[in-house]
Image (cartoon, rainbow, N blue to C red; front, side, top):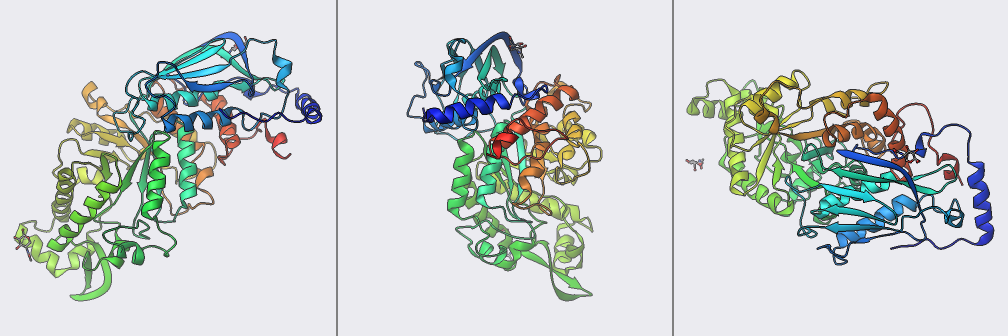
Length: 538
Ligand SMILES: *[C@@H]1O[C@H](CO)[C@@H](O)[C@H](O)[C@H]1NC(C)=O
Ligand SMILES: *[C@@H]1O[C@H](CO)[C@@H](O)[C@H](O)[C@H]1NC(C)=O
């Protein structure tokens, strides 16, 4: 484990002085552990243990199946040691606290096959238990994924008392998530997001126990995904040749996410939202007509051409190789019928197929073909709710993402009554901003408050906080997401009974400060301050 070098004695004196001076007379919320999202069961005892940065270790337990060979765990140990001590470690002299009972070690044991080298999946076991006792704390998990979640919780238990000593209550925690799918949607088409910003987002996601990055990677505005089989797509469709995600960039994101127990689900939204595709792939989009004359504009993907399906067949073969997750998001939202209606070729096709003038049937015809492709690639599909609403014939197991805010509870009711799994994002469109504490609305949204059987409720896989990118780029993504998305994080992880807004406010205020101290520029919840602020300027 990394250890901090001991500062020179003169410096120590100065620091002790500084620590004393910072004993402000006000009651400080941070002098208690603040757990976020709140674990399933927590027992805290009055016995306080002291932790010294110099003498504390995080290590794998003796009976653990994942030993020192698991770099995912070794990296996590190093990260969490630094989160716990990194920021504060120079502010007091540990020798002053030697008389207190000490916690010397956190041992992490993986009970089953560790899955150290796997990618996380929908069925990954994230459960863990944590027992903090003098002199050794024990974190037990079945898989590395639970160990990662438990390390986060352990780091949240440690706080500095009013003398600056690292302190932890003896405690016992057993925890597992309420929903298996807890996502954040980022949009890299409306604005390109540098890889660094995506990695920061993954860090913050781990602090809030999110486990899915829904990467809405391309859209009308730009096509930053660099395809191996169709390089022209990003050559022509990206904002510029430097606003692309190379195979290496994608790999970096996937591996960084994996190390934090986060799945990456790419979204390639069709047949609408595809203007940028048309630049690098001729004859993919439908030419629109103006009074029977071909205009210069294009509509959605042209579903009448065989070449369209040959293209997507090759394209999605690549995508299913590049992205290891079992799921691919196929979009399918907001298809504009106007351009299709002007095109004589489409009109003929509609007639031949007997679709009449119901363009939803053409849309269904197209999406069904794409869905079948994904199935034949042994992957599963996620679609936006219109695909269900427009009565596309769906394979069992196709996941429907409910995003429209009106009547989302009855939509959940209908989707699950039809036997389809659902993901909820309707109440969590974080790109819609307003004055005040909108996190409270996110917090009180309850995904299972629709009318339905137990079996229907079990089909709700979880939810996603969505941050669409029209007004968001690297300058404001992080503060706009955090801590507002944290509210969604707790709703999706913690038991349904954890709903007290006052209690949530107190914990979230501390959690937000903790995120800031870990390098996440999370915006304030309301008035107040963070304990470290006076020290930060030094
Ligand atoms: C932690 O221990 C302190 C000191 O005994 C006690 O006052 C406090 O209530 C404990 N915290 C919790 C959350 O139980
Ligand atoms: C497109 O494919 C279908 C089905 O394989 C075939 O019947 C049809 O003739 C093809 N059309 C063209 C123009 O090649």
